[in-house]
Amino acid sequence: MMQVPGWWDQNVSRETLDKLQGYAALIRKWTPKINLVAKSTIDDIEARHIWDSAQIHTSRQGVWADLGSGGGLPGVVVAIFAQADGLDAAVTLVESDQRKATFLRTCARELDLPMKVVAQRVEDVQGLQAQTISARALAPLDSLLSLAKPHVAKCGLCLFQKGAHWQEEVEAAQQNWRFSYDAMPSKTNAEAVVLKIKDVTRV
Image 1 (cartoon, rainbow, N blue to C red):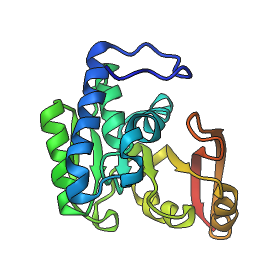
Image 2: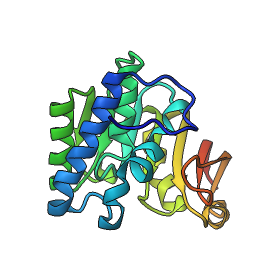
Image 3: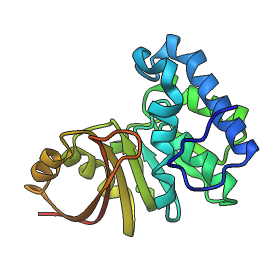
Image 4: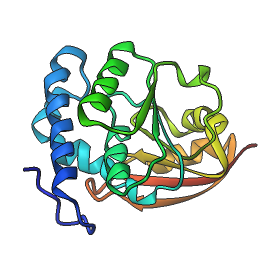
């Protein structure tokens, strides 16, 4: 059974843990074929990837879209917790790599998750009007805002997980964008943050 980290302050049902564990097993099965996560992290998927992704779910509001979802981090994890919370709004995962999109559809089917997979480039997708937009390890913040802006609803929220150089990315993005943000320290990496961004407009 997957272990819940000590910092997690919500109840997690056995069914949810089973789905998280099933997801971890799928990543381990598929990664040798399509490189879903770095092979150096494969033995620590739970802490490095799954619980790292789970921490942003608590900031959820409304319909969720995960851009450049890759192996489903954080999109699949968000869908698992959304289902556990009884939320019926589907999570949309946008991933242009057809093999990774096939993996994501396999996750949806085998784990019975309420999520939709869109196998297109983010730039080619019609506006999703999502209240929450997420992205993890996709692009620098300036580029992320360009990708997210057409898809975020009015008063929507962007949740971007960033590493040690997040402040430099914010400063670079502020050359082209106006936005309000809050940097929440990551629960899994002392150097990382979750950027909560709102009110995005181009300069």
